[in-house]
Amino acid sequence: MNKPHNFSAGPCILPESVLQQASEAVINFDGLNLSLIEVSHRGKNFEAVMERSRQLVKELLGVPEGYQVLFLQGGASLGFLISAYNMMGSRKNPAYINTGTWSAGAIKEVSFTGATANVIASSQDRNFCYIPKNYSIPSDSDYLHITTNNTIEGTQFHHIPETDVPLVADMSSDIFSKQIDVSKFDLIYAGAQKNLGPAGATLYIVKEEAMARRTLAIPTMLDLKKQYEKESMYNTPPVFSIYVSMLTLEWLKNLGGIGEMERINNEKAACLYTEIDRNPLFKGTADLEDRSKMNVTFVLNNADLEPEFDRLWKEAQISGIRGHRSVGGYRASLYNALPLSSVQALVDVMQNFEKQFG
Ligand SMILES: Cc1ncc(COP(=O)(O)O)c(C=O)c1O
Image 1 (cartoon, protein in one colour):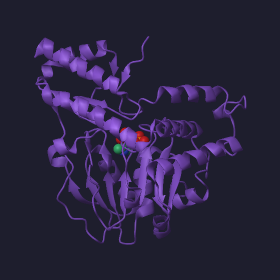
Image 2 (cartoon, helix red, strand yellow):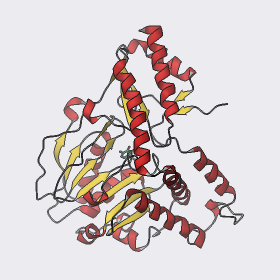
Image 3 (cartoon, protein in one colour):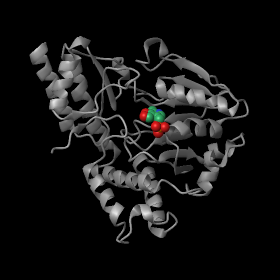
Image 4 (cartoon, protein in one colour):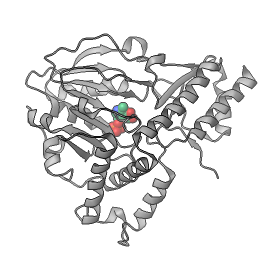
């Protein structure tokens, strides 16, 4: 049976060669005749994996001196709290931009630190279909938190806010999809399960200066400075997720790096958005200039035709394009490992649908 075109929003498609290598390592890791998941994380073989993973993150993203790369646990949802604990200053005045479900989640966690998030801009008034533009960032903010790509609503920051206050970003759903200037951020965090690997590991890229500034007493597992001192191994790390992340990063490097990945991702997004805009049966849900290149959200102009459209894409072996349960409609996630041919398969279905029902 052919593998379906996998548009899942996360966990999501990973490169076939990575799955192959990972499956081999589950049986025989590094020629040890032992599984990757049955050897000590303190052994030299896994320590080399951790080191290589950190090195690849630095190399691919061009992480400048003065930053540390950590692989922790708890997903981006724990990152909401970890970022607040570690970045909170004595003013207890953090600024947040609310661009959807996940940034709302981050805002909610702030209260556990004893502070209240100052929501300086929000796109809630139009169901989060855009990225707010005109707002001012109070200069006395401890930090500004943004969600660079809104996985559920299908919007993305195409311009990072210019600010003098420390910038914190949840990049779970667009990290490694395009070039970024890490030096603009004090802290970046991302769950592994989109462009990196299986769920389990959470990537943190943190400025050393920011770790030195911390003001709160932080529970050990949530303390970035402690985790850095212990080289992400304060406790047993999620070895499988980190190993597969390393393989995916090697794959990305061999492909030509993030510049080449960005070019391919632009092509995939353009292919699908062009069809959505051309085909009278479909409508994109995000404002044009804020559309996400990772999660393309759209609806049918006539919702009564949904069963017909669903039948066609299922027949074409397409999987994972239903919108998030909170918003409905459709969402095609175009993460790094999704080939252009899968996007073309979806476009063919949309054109076929138009021929039959347009
Ligand atoms: C942008 C963003 N932030 C946070 C999360 C939550 O991540 P996790 O399930 O790793 O806690 C997600 C999950 O999809 C996400 O897309």
